[in-house]
Image 1: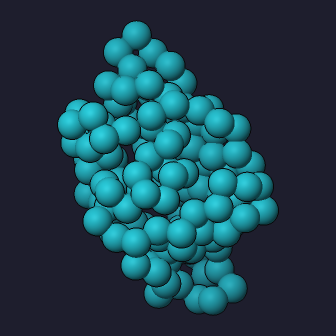
Image 2: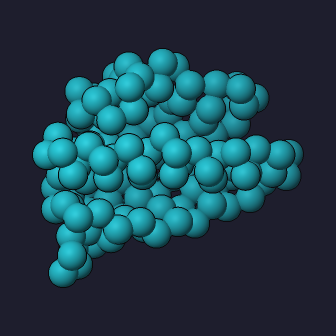
Amino acid sequence: METKTIRQTISFHASAHDVYEMLTDEKKHALFTGGSAQISRDVGGTFVTNEGYSDGKNVELVPDAKIIQTWRASDWPDDHYSTLTITLSPVSSGTKLSFIQTGVPSDQYEEISQGWHDYYWNPMKAALKKGSG
């Protein structure tokens, strides 16, 4: 299967702690996505988010700084996982999130890439603005 890499940089007017919590706390995650989430906060632990659309495993967790996970969408082949790396860096206006996802099936690259903005980054910004973080 041919794959591609998604690279995105997003700025949040919130602390790295609040951004990290939105991604790793299942209640906060469900709040901004509108879908159920079961998220382990342990390295080696698993997650299932967005009503079962995505699942994977935590490879590395550095609170308020880094998340590395295997990640797959429910319509991908059962044995195919991408690798997702999120790095959080404090900046004067809040937090810069650097996102890299390797191993995305080429035929779903555009959809997955846009989906991160539509279903994650933009709703997270709105939730954090309301003080939900």
